[in-house]
Image (cartoon, rainbow, N blue to C red; front, side, top):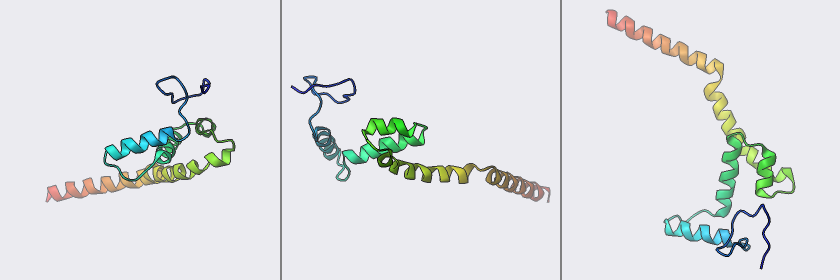
Length: 117
């Protein structure tokens, strides 16, 4: 019988930790049943870590969750998050918001001028 510790997340019906590859096998089976032919447990793991980082989780917590001994293994997820950060920066930077506001005011002014004619 395998011993589980307080960090064991996935347990069998007998309360034992999943064996190596068990979660991957289950995910693959359920994905096939759902008609999804591509993807794997690793994709879900990567997506989870990326979403956590994008929503403000500290990278050290993600490192612990993923079981990475070295932080550099976890830092790959920051590359994805940096892409999202750039998108948000471009969309919400005050200079852009000011330009959008001026464009909106110009459009409203043009519409008002058109209505006056």
